[in-house]
Length: 244
Image (cartoon, rainbow, N blue to C red; front, side):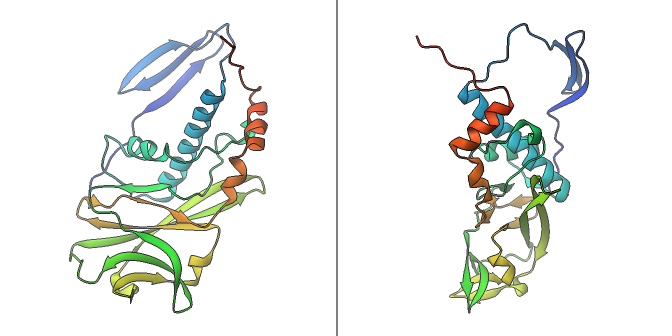
């Protein structure tokens, strides 16, 4: 199984009084000027992009913390792979006081990326029991196959901070049920509107590309115009684009 190490930028220190920031990139120590006489531009598009990146980083921190075994095999690092996929998620607007830690459960959160065919899955019912429905068939099975079920849960920590927590466990085909020739997982937990799931197929160092499916809608209240304006105000407002 391929193991990647996230490099990226690692802040080593900051000398704010002298206007210098020091950080490490690709093993080299880099120094750059950190101050400017001009107010930082914060146009609507810049603000949206910063909020999107903020949420990507918050999701990544929780996924990496909770799941030690990550399956992102299509880019140089796990984080690069994850962030390129998470960039497609809707923008959620969060005020500055919660900017570093808030994360939201929503459909499409990536949990793996690889070359095996994606497992088509949806939430439904089988024999009156909530179930995770898949397109896995009984004759499509390798003895080297491993199935990993990722679970995401929306939490509200300290009555203030929304966070997504992740867990992962292996599922055997014998734990699943055949319905109309396709494998399903049955469990009353699949009716929980604050949870989401993704079943990942792994064979040796290859995996399927999967994203979370969920009924959770909490994130939607952070995507509207009111949330945008509240969040922007906490950053000092948006920069008006001058008319030409």
